[in-house]
Image 1 (cartoon, helix red, strand yellow):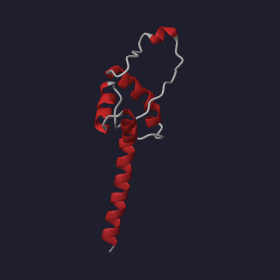
Image 2 (cartoon, one colour):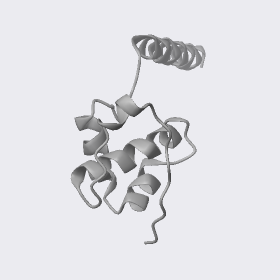
Image 3 (cartoon, one colour):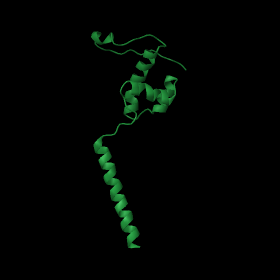
Image 4 (cartoon, one colour):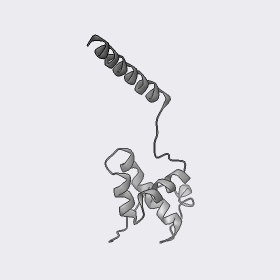
Length: 100
């Protein structure tokens, strides 16, 4: 796999929080964090990001989980909407079956 250097502008005070040791776990974490916005906006899959990082998808999910980034992010409103949809479909099915 080929690598390239990138540069990121940040406040001087923030630079001390970035470890730049090549090949370390922190380096992998930093690379994964740089890819996360593309995963978040769905322009990059977890699988493709993991491949780019040279790790398995499961390892990437575990890495993000350790950083507090969930693999599946669902709000309570999403659950309620899904349940309402399910109930509506189920009701239509019941009405269809009883009408026959």
